[in-house]
Length: 215
Image (cartoon, rainbow, N blue to C red):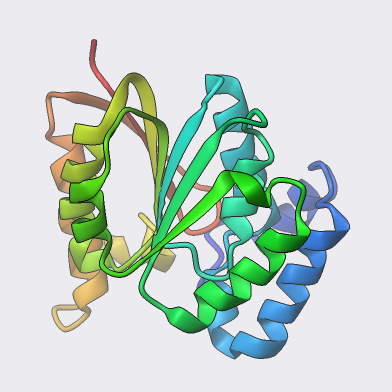
């Protein structure tokens, strides 16, 4: 993944952001050892702290996550929920689910997290809203479908956050054979043209879009 922001600026920002708790530092280190190049899928300190701050600022009690990977972002967001709050996370990868659950069991916030294994769209059909916050970070070709399903479950003042919306800068000149880049470009256009919402793209990590319903 190409850094959107120059590396030294990224390092400065990280050095001036609240440090991660030891358990999450351990999770990151083990993810890098066990998952190799896939560890780039971690949201990391800056984006994770942004998600946590958004959940806290909204006073959220219910959060939905589409794509949990090894559980870092779920734990970051769960830490901002009240003790009776709920975070539902969806994933299809049994290996990464088992990895994340080990850390959920060790965290004081793990009891707030419920993992739904299987296709997110099918699971979303069975869920009842409203959710105060939705984080989408899964397979890119389905972003448009996740977005529509999330809007239907979103609380009136809720927020949707969507990861990887700059796709290492490839949104500027997407190759015809790059299915993910093409999907992201189509998704970004869809949101931008959607009169139902207000949206902003942030140049954090690989690009994060924040979306809320117009009221």
